[in-house]
Image (cartoon, rainbow, N blue to C red; front, side, top):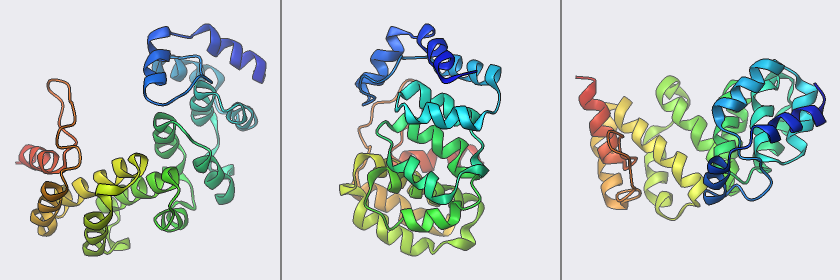
Length: 221
């Protein structure tokens, strides 16, 4: 499939409600507004196609980039290329897909995590804290959790929204997966109050860390 054909297919799948949602959440106008499920179906049809993925990415179109993420070969990207991709992002939904499907499995993700955790670029910081949240769960030996809590306590309340979101994930995951730090994590969340009044749908768990921690721990019995 050529770039032009892929863009035509995305355009044909445009949905005004999705477009409006994206626009409301910061996507801008360079988008078709394709439902996530339809992007997945198109990616399944195309299969892995690294060169096409790079062409789609370069359009900066939201839907094209999301499609690119699903068909790219993560391990063929250099650390520098992936870093540039992260820094080029403007819409958090695309950032989260890139983090989940590409950054998470990239061979240099720990090297990049350390770099991004020192970075003031909002999307680089978002990616760094996202990887740190995963390490809290699966590779805590890589971390100084007490120092992480110190940093969250100091920085989260004034962090850019892009970074604040995944920083809060790290706080919650520390409280959930490390009982020895649970009381402190909850106390930090209560003190900072980040996402305390965040609107949530019925049946969903609040992202406010104290509520989130207590809810997940209670489910674990």
